[in-house]
Image (cartoon, rainbow, N blue to C red; front, side, top):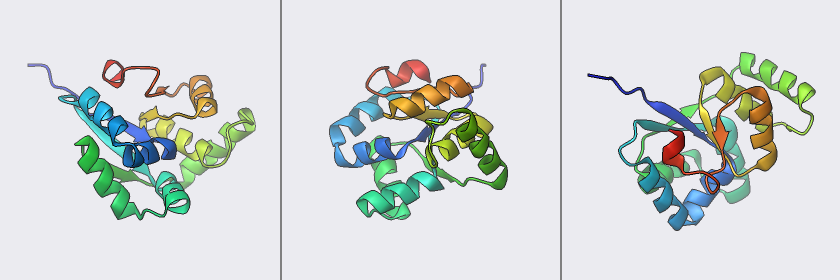
Length: 144
């Protein structure tokens, strides 16, 4: 019997906000991930950004995302090694600003797939060799 590995999908802050504020999007995402061995990942940078922009606490975000999408959510923190990688990413791809560079470094180090609406971040992922996609351009279930 073939064992399925769990794919981890990191959510960018714009996707988190979209899921929470537009439940139609959450429903589509939930349906596309149904039956797939997937875990959603929120990094501390994303949680801080969502709290700064929308005022949701980390606990509220985790609860809402898990409930709306129906998948387990885990938290991942950026470590010192990933911060060094992030600085080199910014030096190499100057359009990748602080925050995005940290998310990109985390995804690269942990082999996460990134889900984002940010076109510049998608371009940086392409250059850096990180799997990423725009949820309205591609069917999520075909990526995972």
